[in-house]
Image 1 (cartoon, rainbow, N blue to C red):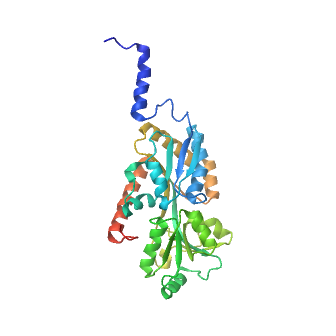
Image 2 (spheres, rainbow, N blue to C red):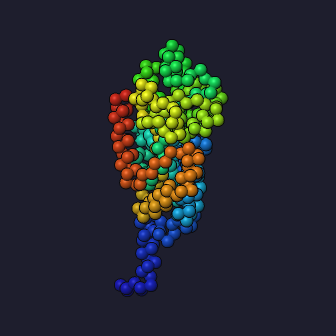
Image 3 (tube, one colour):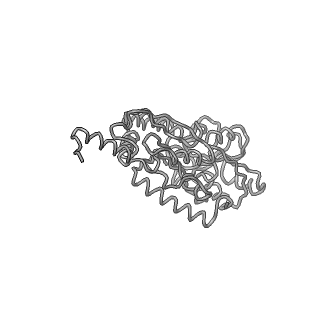
Length: 324
């Protein structure tokens, strides 16, 4: 057998690397744009965060990013699209808690948490109860008193079944002994539209999605589900302050499909970290009312696994929807 000519060796090695990892170092991310999947409709906090952050990741990664909204089924449509995408570094996406871990607990899905490689958590956004400005309800207690006298008449909108806002409201209803009517939507924007239009009694949102509409006088906030009063709503009492020990919200972060080469994940993670810490981005995020909380790949993975375990325990003890 003839020995390989020396000048052929680098080319052969490059071909082996490309075949093994699905993408070659010299090619990524230089030959085409990267698609970032958002599992919710335009106008919600996840969509806003993605569109604000993408240009800064582009800045540090050296490649353009295209936002693709894939709403539906409380996030399942978009999460599935991300999980089943080619692991070549050209598809990334936002994954939202608790939906990304609760949906596979509720029903059979085409993805699990192991279908993703966590890259970076970006936001930590507590939930809140909102009503229209002309609503008769000004406190949680007033809402509770009315709902007890009129069981099943108070409708509440959320961003989907198994979402943080849905589970939080179910926990609140059980704690207060209420019967409420759930109206799920495919994201915060249609939920907010329904509330503003008077089609639902109560809207459950993350605080970032509520701030603008409270400030302009369209909506009224009844309480926030944070550990303590947040910078966005320093004068609004928490649920704990009003007698309900409910602390929950949504974390939003970036993930890649399982099987994406480690060096690609690391390079994207580095760009994401620089983007989140970019002073210009942080200023824009503050103006958009986005509560930032950065976690790197390892911390983010550990957080998601712990969260899944806690929701699995909650489901086993008290399912938030009828078991299928």
